[in-house]
Image 1 (cartoon, one colour):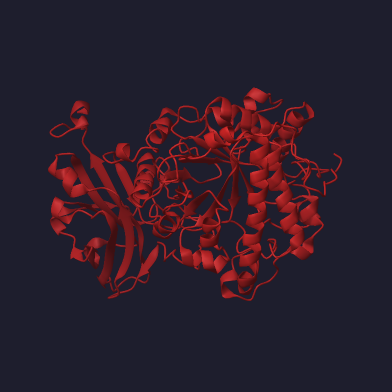
Image 2 (cartoon, rainbow, N blue to C red):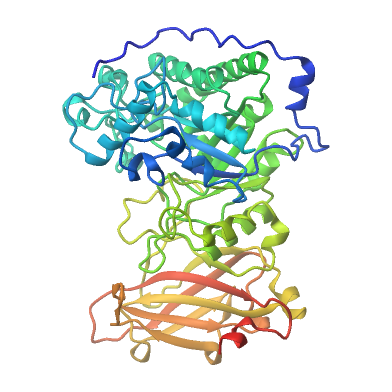
Length: 568
């Protein structure tokens, strides 16, 4: 395959008639809050590869096959597709004129799945079908917003190592001087030193060309800038330099969006994916208050951590909501789907409902499932996925549905955590030392006492999982919000050793399952579970760990009627 020559200029916008003032007014929010109801609210992130025909279908791929990525959202409750338009190494997943498309710079492949994906995209392009244009047109045909997502912090690599995988562009290979390099800051120990630094003007200009293309050559409804991967975009001690540089780049991006709006007559939004906590903004060099004040961004997609972080339902939106109050900037609560447990690798229906309810309770304007793909029951989606998602735009429909609240916990085989990021706190598992209390917090959205008074609560369970423990041989105290959990409400589940259809249940230990009375219910908002190992079995030499904390809320369809009675 021949390498493409990059265009070095932004290029002219497509020849579309200038929009009238009336057309632009129709694309502008008009409700009294300034945020408007006719804006993206429930956003679905998809890289168009993993849960899509690009990887899973044998060739040749027809355009209608490719559109399954959009079609699965129709009638789902999601109103917006955030489509990954590029790979982490600067490669485009469409017929770009300013960057290389996947496969353009590969002579021989070493990965069969990526080879298939690139062949599919190259074949579509060769047939005159631009994948991104197909996505945009189908979204609008079906009444969905189409937001093109891309990176500004690229992952560096060298041609010898990455050249057979196609994920890095020649631009990345040819500019090793743009890498952040080794950083003596202790927080940088788990970070990739080959990631690119945004302090280099050449990188900023190249990324601006790519984002301008997403605005001007395609009828997207805007872009999403990924600010949660390959961060920080410089060495830690350089973030003071980065902050004004990044803000100025967003000013240039806004100018390009405005120009594309005027040409296309279509509103061009700028969303940014960021950590939730303002201290994290400062640490990474993100002048979010300036971006909001100057109307450089239209939406903040707030995550509890970074992209690789495990599922966290307790996104703290207070700072973002306060910052955007009275502005047109929207706040979207984002959730990763990865739980990484033996029986919950992906977030369950009840976990997603719990996360969405928490986001709305925290003041969010919308909710997003922020992962590369989502297929909790395999792909394509089952009826359960549609039942899950149809409620996500409606806080009132989430109020009295079953929920599973789960304290943040690292996946069993996950990589290094991001506890260094401000606002993250320490995740589970946590080791227990004799006489030293260990606490973990989780939030719930439900008004459980009020619902119980109306006869709507079937059961509320608090489940605390400990590893390497025999309850009869150890003395342990468990508390919720400072109150000891009553023994009479406890049921023990023995997981020391059990054979299961999915293999041996692990980790070894016990689940302490408290069925709570109304006087012991968790409160709306933040709750604290405290576990204290009062006395450990003196004959063992291992650590007992607090592994999982779950709060399960089960509702009745109506008072005095339990659906289970029909199944007996």
